[in-house]
Amino acid sequence: MKFFRLEDPIYKFNWYVQFGDSVQSAAQRFQEATSCQTWDISNSAHAIFTSANDFWGGLLWFSEANPSPGTIAHEVIHATFHAMRKLEAKIVDEHIEEVFAYYADWLVQHITKRKRK
Image 1: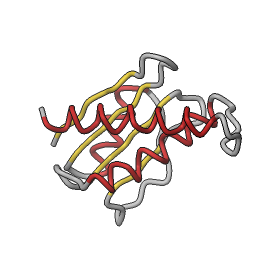
Image 2: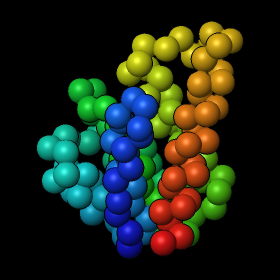
Image 3: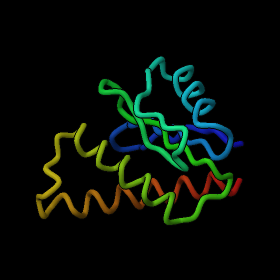
Image 4: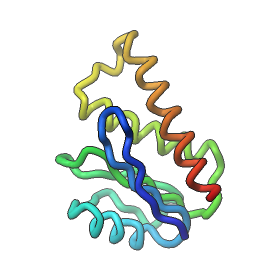
């Protein structure tokens, strides 16, 4: 089980990531680190993204210690949408597409880099 925090250097979102162990363990660690309550926690999920309305960031949990790149990308897209909503970006705007793509790229790169350590 690996648990770590990523702080993005531009918008200052705090992303907590956990590989392995239970979703309840990940939610508890997230709550202890942030004092935020999580929601939409499903025991049947293999991976989740969750956050609180007033928190700039969130929890990305993966049931496997070594999830597929597709699973990581799937949860990162949820996290990126959350970030863009917090920034009040219009997702359908043609200019936000590059911001969205670069932000998702940054998250995937840093999550996979930390996963390997």
